[in-house]
Amino acid sequence: MPKIHATAIVDPSVVLADDVEIGPYTIIEEQVTLGSGCVIGPHCVIGKGTVMGANNRTYSGAQVGISPQDLKHLPDAVGKTLIGDHNIFRESVTVSSSTVYSPEDTEKITRIGDHCLFMACSHVAHDCIVGTRVIMANNSGLAGHVEVQDGAILGGLAGVHQFCRIGTMAFIGGMSRINMDALPYMIMEGHPARCYGPNVVGLTRNGLSKEAIARIRRCFKILYRSGLNTSQALEEIEKTIEDCDDKAVLVNFIKTSQRGILR
Image (cartoon, rainbow, N blue to C red; front, side, top):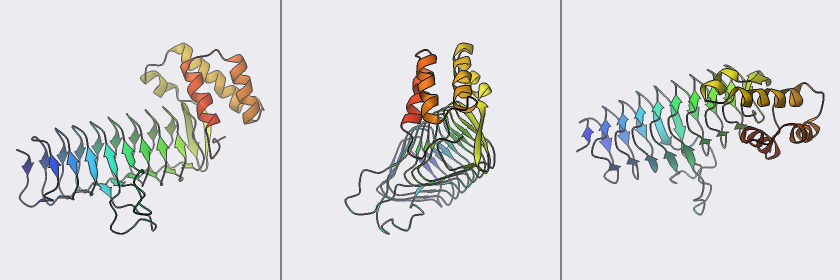
């Protein structure tokens, strides 16, 4: 049977795996599902409609799947929050559910993948998509509708504007302001942020070969050091860089950008 502290409040509709632990003074709202091995710490709130996979852990004061900070959200509506496996939500982390604008608005979702670390006081807003192995350091924050791709890292106090994307394995320096899309594989830092080159340490840790890192470095030089505009740089990359997965990821990210890329 789940281990539920006597002071916790758990709605009768909640579905709990047999080995879930729920700490003191925690509230688990209606329509929540918690998978095997989840440990919900003290003074936490798991908001209505949240679905968590296996082996997630929340620390004191974390609030996951709570109603979004969006004035357009219908007061009594239930947004959706889908959490994968093996995620850690440290003290006072907040994750908002999707926004519901109308009773027919059922497709939106706030989604978090697997093996992510959300350090103390970080924030994931409504309708964000966070991939796997993402790290958000203390007090970093995502505005609504942000996408953070696999393996990205956000430094402390970094802020990301609505509808921006953080590319896979990008590193966002502390206290940076991200108001456009941050390219995969790159280091972005500043206020506003600019690109400082490939995230070599992160790429190496993620198992990319020296050849792949060399290709990414060449792409960086074409994009940022050649004097070409973005369209011209894309043409040059497609002509001069051999076809490979990392090139395809970078080119596709730029071509599908809606807000433009950080320069």
